[in-house]
Length: 92
Image 1 (tube, rainbow, N blue to C red):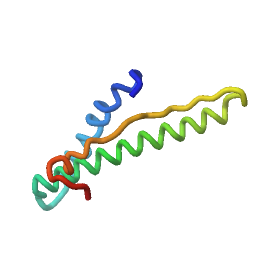
Image 2: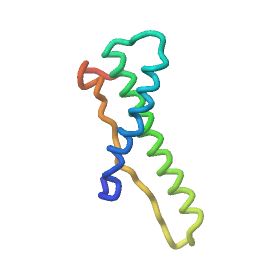
Image 3: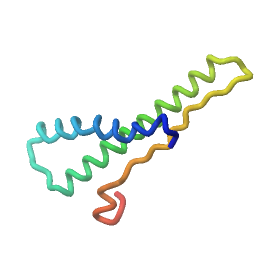
Image 4: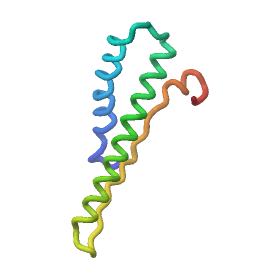
């Protein structure tokens, strides 16, 4: 990933922690640690998808706004570690 995007992984981790904490506080049942890992991984994957879609949309908007001879794109090489799959050896 380009150096200007190096902070995105950490920023996404920081952004998703409160979401998972809110889930923990609001659920009436107590999921197992395996379930929490699945929830945490799903939230992280959703965040990565959102960033990628946002970068694509930004690229399209900028492309429309610049002269025909110019080109700009924001390609974010960002992925999510599937910690659930790493621990349990398969994907959902």
